[in-house]
Amino acid sequence: MIKSEEITSKTIQSCIHNIRNINIIFDFDLAELYQVTTSALNQAVKRNRERFPDDFMFQLTQKELDNWMSQFVISNPSFKMGLRKIPYAFTEHGILMLSSVLRSQRAINTNIQIMRTFTKMRQSLVGYSDLNKKIEYLENRYDKQFKIVFDALKRILEPKQEINTIKKIGFGR
Image (cartoon, rainbow, N blue to C red; front, side):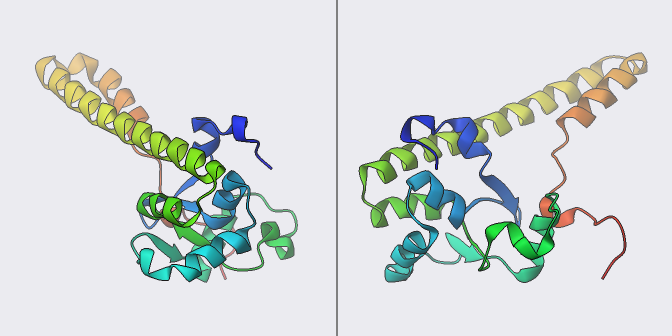
């Protein structure tokens, strides 16, 4: 269980995943951050379902879950990382809405930290975009002898491959 003083931006970033090209946090990670059970969190959401439209929260498909779990090395596939149900994924807006459903001081403090983390992530993406524009400008300005340098910089700045598009290695089903 994560202690209140241990909720850092780094802790929250490790809980953020990209599924359907959306940054989300799973219900079980949110429950741990809020220090409630996953069932208690989901029960609070069910009691207030009208506050959580599909663009705020959605349940993964079995294929998405299998793909996500394949990204982690699991020695015992029947264990399923402790998951008994397909998890719900909360978008940034859904997490913000959770603050109106979970009213503990812990939930308030955690939500503030999560929102700050999402803001930092957005700001860093804007920084990458600006950097890409500057590299393109320099590339057009200078002769081709710097092509290797510019190509290397572009490879570094390319977004990582999304979970949904990663091809499985080995024998297919």
